[in-house]
Length: 380
Image 1 (cartoon, rainbow, N blue to C red):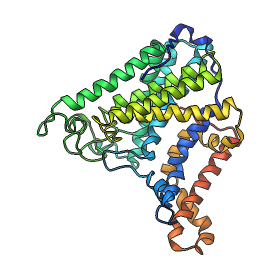
Image 2 (tube, one colour):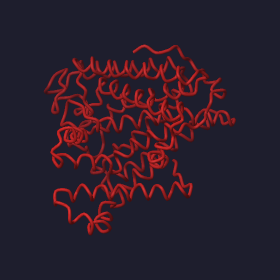
Image 3 (cartoon, rainbow, N blue to C red):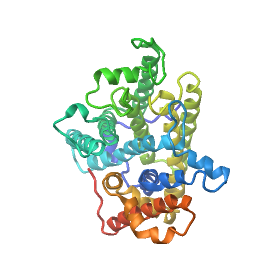
Image 4 (spheres, helix red, strand yellow):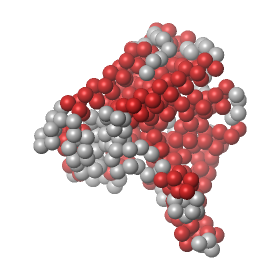
């Protein structure tokens, strides 16, 4: 995966542009759309229309049981990537205001602790603090917090090329570890559900409850490849802020995207694409996809200026933490049933769940729109 020679030194980052890009908020909103009800709505369309294309699209919103890949597998990696991209803008803005690197690290460290705590609450509510053995400590929010903190430390200390080298090095070492380190009772190179090193490591070293009983895809070893997505995001953030033409930025990011996708597909032949293991091929594929999709959004929205269509997504993307927790603790689908069942009950019964899911998502978006209109943006 070749990259343009870019080496933004930490002491010079104050001079880099830190203007907020609408495309990042829009793409984050597109991502959160899939989590906050859009993905469920599309999935429920499967088998309803009799149209093969729609059935195929619906099937893309269910995770494969083990090896393999669907679009739904891309949702979380994209968010980790965008967390890294957004972080570069925040750090550069802080440095431009005269905030020291040490103070910025302290703020990001506190943010990590808050996200870990919120993640534990999210995965365990109602949480029994007196039974820690049955608490699940791995979480989406915790992973975002940890990956962002480590990504921030490396961003402030390492150049573009160094971060690229670190990410690729981690992915290669992760591959060698899972292939060469023997698992008791299974030997080395076993990537099956039962015999993989990630599961063995989780069972022996991860405290608390494991999501899949024999392993947890958000536990210990998989944190290392996940960090690489955030590092890739910082590479995109630097490119977007470099004083070069938008066309060159787009071209360089697209090149990285295509290279990442190709590397992931080729690596798949010896190290299968697997979201559960966060395999190196999975990281390269989703990292390449993230570069590509960000390029498309950036070119259309920020370069060509076609922004009006993206408002729908930006409303979601500017309050991503709120909606992630809201759909966990507020039953929007039940509210949809109370408000809309009087309308959709006359449709064929197989469509009721589809219309109810659509109504739930409408309520989610309206909730976020009220926050947007009142300029309420919750950040950690």
